[in-house]
Image (cartoon, rainbow, N blue to C red; front, side, top):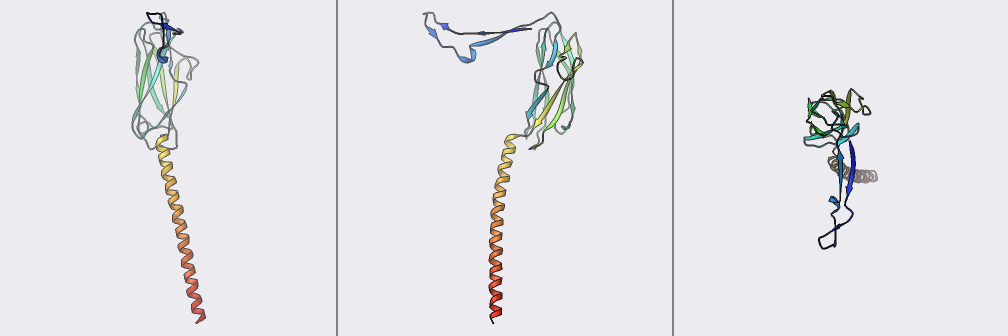
Length: 204
């Protein structure tokens, strides 16, 4: 496939006056798709991808890209494998077939991630694409090589929940420190009172 960028540098109205161009639409990426071959498949992420965990369930969308050809329909199998992340506890295990229609250059695999009170630990699982059909190949430079591609997914802690918990811990710590100071003052006063009472008995 070939790619190049088209950028608008100046624009004129019918009266010949220059007009402003919105930054978001001032350029475009043009792709020339090689449709003579079936294509080479790989994940749209790097070999390792980190997501932020959450107390709530969510779905991780993983893009799979088709390059160097888009001729005909191709397929490949995909499935997950747990590591420190446990299927049924941290994520829902999936196993299916990903289909690319003719000239389709990207598809998405969805992995359900389960909500957790994960605050410090990072859990890990893997997503595999394998068993290509229709003449498709896998990117040899990626993890897994020519026979399959492997994506390692890291589920990190929920940073917002972690920050909230850290604030709660800090507040409890301050209350505990004040309590200890109050206890120490009370203990000192009690000892002083005992000492004074003891001294009066000796004087008698």
